[in-house]
Length: 210
Ligand SMILES: [Zn+2]
Image (tube, rainbow, N blue to C red):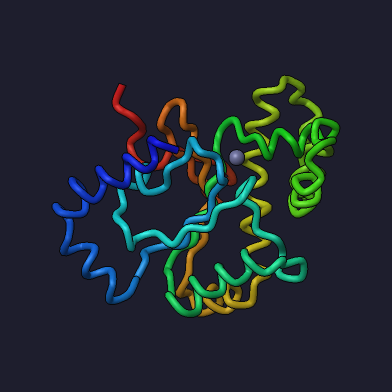
């Protein structure tokens, strides 16, 4: 905890003073570029990854970057999505999964969730992902590629769930909103984006300089 408190002190001393104008401007309101939906995993830093400033990303995080379908909506996710689309009028929504996702590993191995009943319950929103992997990926038996496939398929399932939210469906119908599926591989710095025309993930940007 001490590290966090010292961090606040350093932020106020170094960062805030040098960017005071930005923070004062933000007091007047926000106009984020996008809604960024990702996992709670501590290894992901959306603003660092996309090199965006405070005020540019509206962020929704939970275990497994899951979007409950509107009918199952628990409240928090649906409210955040509705506010982003209808009130803030974001033009893009990104669902960003990531490598080595613990939630997706739990989805593949529900027997390991014995002492985590809330997680097990939450992952029922990704039941379609589990079913897709079980029925369509029998040929991939090795743990690592099977987890990667789960992460990738889950992003697509959650994009479909997004479309069940009325605010999203309406904005898509007006052509005022675009949905994007990304997978962030933090150990290489790569981001893969889903190309719906080609039906596969491609590298976003130039990839890391090696
Ligand atoms: Zn995760």
